[in-house]
Image (cartoon, rainbow, N blue to C red; front, side):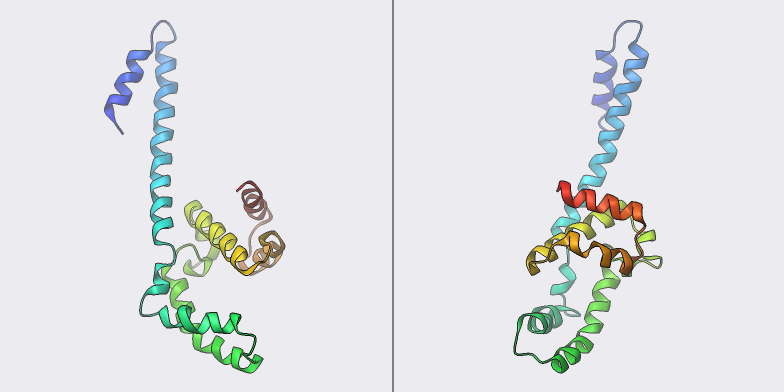
Length: 163
């Protein structure tokens, strides 16, 4: 924390309520400081999101197999099933190195941080936009798949609606 900010707060406070005012302002500054830590982590996550898809362990799958699996109408169901099996090691690797995936965590969503969940929701939203799906329509499936509590589902849906 910038010590000058605390000094400035003390200088601004005068009169009988000076101590209380200083306490409030110090609290405001501490909240700002803590929020900046979260913001910096979110910025770092935004810059490095899914970088592993471009690494050796995942790139062939994410650059060649998955786009063909979902983007080629000529692929048969049998071919798609074989591609899914071939893609599984890269997908599992991806989950194992990216904390915004519930599969990364031993206890799934219950072990995630708010920063992990924010990145996960942004990932879901971007993926649904790319595929032309409505994320809100997928929330029931996401709730079942990741065992989201009703409260967390509501928080996520409120966030989707707001942002």
